[in-house]
Length: 299
Image (tube, rainbow, N blue to C red; front, side, top):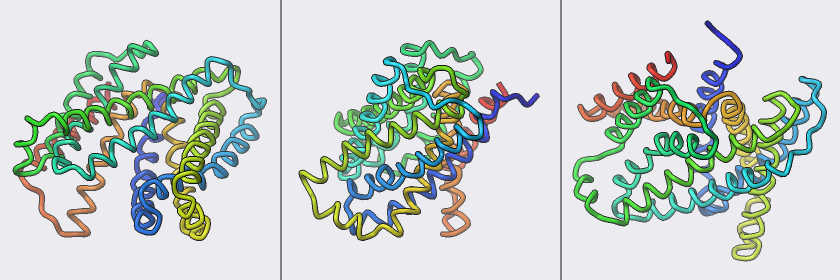
């Protein structure tokens, strides 16, 4: 039976689609702006749209404009900083010879999110959901591996990079959920929108100050590319809005596990657009992802 609480499922699917689109746009801007410049676009140009989303949420719900409690800010800052640190780990991974193995370790984010959510927020997961998370994660790890990559599993560096990136992204997801829950006296829509607006403000401030001090020319280039950046910022804010709406309704582990359908989207694009056939390993991974996601949604 469909309930308000089950809205986290379509919210997550929409967010995953939006994130795929945002990543594609950011990829085109990485060349002229560098990785940190392209990353800042999702924050800098996403911030105005998050303010608009927040205003629309307040108008649509009739909620008062909330001022978050003192418990809100530690969660928010932790989530914002963790997301930036996770991006840093990913940048290091991209320059590492063991990127494939590092990526496989990064796919443990859903499991780590479940652990951190239970420790810090007391999020309870049923046995069926835990099994679903494990199955889907194993499927993604199998899909992420490539021939010859297994030799690097004995190395410490890809293990640290991959598990470290997964851990900070997991902490980020749990922290954002903690911040949303700490917004008092309003609907989940307003709480999620408020949290998104403040998180983008903090992230914009941190990265813009960093670029101003370390690479001021990148900031000038960002402003010069405002047209494509604006759309990328919109897609970033749009997808984040739905991530936060989903976090408001259910445990972050549920959201991040269902988000693994991004892998299915990417595999579908590779097959239909690039005519890349599936290997047996990829097919096994895809089947496990589908089984895990189906169990998660059904439980």
